[in-house]
Amino acid sequence: MRALLAWLKSRLDLVAGAAVGLAGAGLVLLGNPRNSGICASCFAENVAGALRLHTDPRMSYLRPEFPGFLLGATLAALASRGFQSRSGSAPLVRFFLGAFLIIGSAVFLGCPIKVMLRLAGGDLTAFAGLGGLVAGAWVGVLFLKKGFFLGKSTRTGALAGWVLPGAMALLALAAVLAPPAFTGGLVGAAREHAPPLASLAIGMVVGALAQRSKFCVSGSLRNFFLTRSVRQLGGLSLLLVTALGVNVAAGLFHPGLYDQPGSHLDFAWAAGGMFLVGLAAVLIGGCPFRQLVMAGEGDADAGSAVLGMLVAGGLVQSWGLRSTIAGATPAGKLATLIGLVLVLATALAYRERS
Amino acid sequence: MRDGCTPARRLDWLERAVAAALVAFCLAAVVAAVRLGAAAGGGGADLLAELRERTERRVAAEREQIRPAWAAAVRGEAEAALGAFADNSQLHLLLAGVYRESGSAAPALREYRRAVELLRDYADRHSPQFVGPGLAIWLREVRPAVSGAALADLHYLERALAGGCS
Image (cartoon, rainbow over all chains, first blue to last red):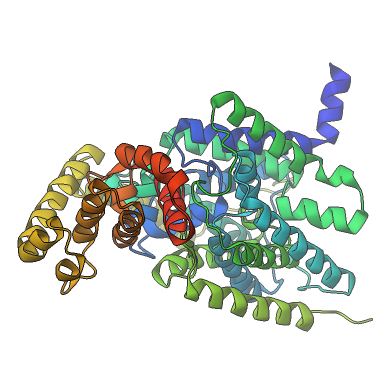
């Protein structure tokens, strides 16, 4: 038993991967939209709607998981004395790259975690997104190997690290206590949600485990390409396996291409959107979920990325920078191309040459 | 963190005043938030009832406005019906039903798709305007008989009915 615990402690990425898979599939059973139990980008759009950054009531709900991820990471970091206010690594660049994480995700219809959850639900269209994500992460690693560096973050005044945890604590309180007139969640996908307290609790547990293990989908791919060790993909594989297991057991596994919830058949743009996400995520050290976790540890630069994510969560809806079930919108295609240009330009501009 | 040797520094008058103001502001904010919440009115059930009522009123008013076109749609005269109201979701839905009854699957699918594109509520199982289970069964029935653009319309409708976050 002791040996097992010690092994688990050494492989917390596996525990976190399994927890994300279980939570992702479990939250669907509790009421979240199908194949979307956990999706940091969908949640960012929902929260942006609740904050009136866009006006589509179908995507407006103050999802408690969103602040839950960050607050769970804060508590875990405090408990392990890992909380440290730090900043100074190109926060404005991270703001825009954080925004493009959400735009790319909106064109695919889901964040990297949702790529795995969609696959676990039998959505074969998600393979296009997976291909784009892997390719984007690979290109990002090429830039890392060529000296890409956004600058060193340094310790800073305590307040900087506490801004987002404080704001998220208020959001979490509002998500649980405020009336539906404020939190939204009355129609469409926003209507589908787990009980707020359960969502918050599950979000906090997942956030805490992700903080301790540094679990991240694009981070796993980055580490794999850097080390060529399949061990780095263990957590990711377990996410897929556990979510698949729950879906099969609950009768939620429906393999197919054409009738999948929250999907479209514009495979090239799905791959393009996820390519943008994979590339940007490797450059700023993690996918949207990981940015939330890092912001919870006191990283104000990741906090800038989270704010960029929230602003983009509003813009993708109000400017139509996304896909619908009919496919990528013209504005979504243009935003993806602009995002690729800007992210690649950033990658070139921030190379440190020896 | 004190090391036990350094005595705790006493707060000066400015720090004490700011601390007192912070406590007062926090308490006032909590009271204001509670009052704001109370003023926002009822729970989800109240809001849903209001939403349902508003939708019914809007649908009735819209139907009154398009009465002549409605009559043309009932007769299956698509051009006459949609002439002045090409973006009216109710007319497209009505036409879809008329085509479906007459056994014309392809134009029915086209009109259903247009209706759902104009108003996603038709495919939203939580909406009072949901046209759901019956449509899903019909889609399964006609699937073997359609191809090309009609099949693409059918797949669109299947994805819309599947829900999800989009």
